[in-house]
Image (cartoon, rainbow over all chains, first blue to last red; front, side, top):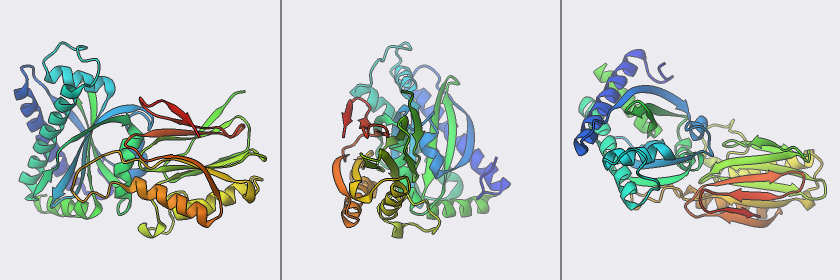
Length: 201
Length: 164
């Protein structure tokens, strides 16, 4: 279902870009490990800001978030969101340990997740840059474990100053490990993104 | 006694006067949970404040709880409507954290501190005593106001619980 602000053609263009970005992320993550890692089946949706704090099962659910700011022609936020269990399993996968090995998120785990954020964020933004010609760079990732509502709210609050919706990409790591991937440009940036999509479409 | 939890979402204002009621702001980050309580009438109000000042908003139809400056008079009015005496109302607040501690980038993400400050200033302006607060830091909080007793419970992930 396309968001209110995108026409069908623009939505399809964006979906193709998102798929390409996730494919590139999968390839990059797989090359870091021996096992194949596949980010799949993206679902693309525009969400009203006030429902965002609840997307990961409720605002009080504990999640692990990898946050990157985005700067350049688009300003805003990028976030990867996992349940704590999924985050631990992603770490297992990246460290090539049997599932269940990582029990707590230590420094190595945090840096593995930060790297995942880096790889996914860069691949995704590169795919977006390539197609739209917009220059977009991510900031250094920050990894936070806390209540989903608390983490998301901090970003949403800032967006509330000038926008009502965010673009959410829902995906899964190797089918069984669901995660959320959020692209949250501010309103001016969203307008620039849509304009760029119009040109391509 | 059975308790019924009423979630207070982003920018919402909820009130209660039944002893079993609990008003809950789940997962406060930079937002501030403002609790107003009259210990004699056993009437309470909880507001989930998002932003410090309504001049920051674009629309004129924002819910009253969204901004600190509009949240406070709206909260007082609601408590009074349910039988509270303005002079007996006591405020407690929690939240206003800085969740994403990002160096540089001229980040505006420390809206938490501005929220706490705005709520403090607004309470003073309206002559409501701020009895206690648990604000700041870099972690999330869930805040529950128990209408029957006036108990205010702040819980966190990995940092335990605290009563205000």
